Image 1: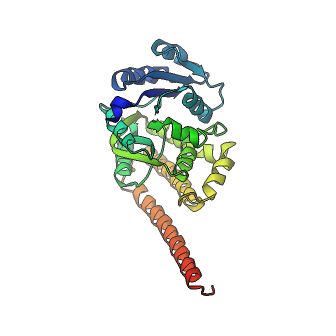
Image 2: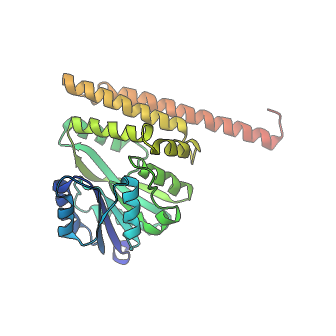
Image 3: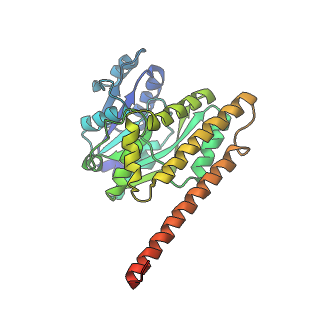
Amino acid sequence: MVEWTMNVDVVVCVKNRAESLDRVLQQIVHEIPFKNLIIIYGSSKDKTKEVAERYTSQVFWDEDKGLGAARKLGMEKATSEVVAMIDSDIILTKGWFSRLIKYFEDPKVAAVMGTCIYGYGCKPLELYHEYMRLNCREDWGCHNTLFRRDAVLKVGNFDETIQGAGEDFDLYLRLQNAGYKWIWAKEVVVYHPMSMLEYLDHLRWWTRSYWWTKSSSRLRHIISTDIKGKSLFRFYCNQIRLILEAFVMGVCFFIKIHPTMIIYYPLMRIIIIITRLKELKKTLRFAHNKTRRLMKLPH
């Protein structure tokens, strides 16, 4: 079995999360048979570093270069075949590790992640992310993800120039383009406690990371190359979805209307349908042009 033959290192990137860090490290100690526990921290106003040093001697400062640099440093400090990237503010569930590690029996699998239920403790958000878990076809992230270390290094590791969100999507595209698989094990769930206001602030940070930080032009360039169907049009649709989500969630929060199934889902479905129609049009155009070339017909 994979869990008996592969060594595992755990990497946690953290900043200003002393309380939640202590909670997740207790879970990691009991849940994962790791070889090394590595904590990468950013300059914090609380006792994040002190909490980290109670659990391991492998505590490193990321020089406040951002999340991409922190994840890259964690991958470099790791030495095992598999590296578990776990966010400091999630709650693991029993059997999380044993249910994910089995996917590495396939040598083409470079990453496998579970579902993160954002907004744990806020019922509308829980229902929304449960809906997404059941209906979305793909997802990516590093909040609860196992990586095959050599595959990540072969494609260049995490991009340290991406300072905000998006370092996961960048790596996801490069791994897929190199022929590796990024598995989303929907049935394996972790929880991220978050209030409605915290979730809206998280969406604001995520969106700004793409459009108003130094990483935005880098990510837009990557996506515009249309790697395995991840088109720029699809990226724009995802951004529109985020803006609609933040707006609708915010309005529903203040007027106390349940946001799920009332307003947001129809809007989301419309965007998904438009995206798929666009992709279908591209596919048909490609087939049409290829047929003409094969038959040597004029355009």
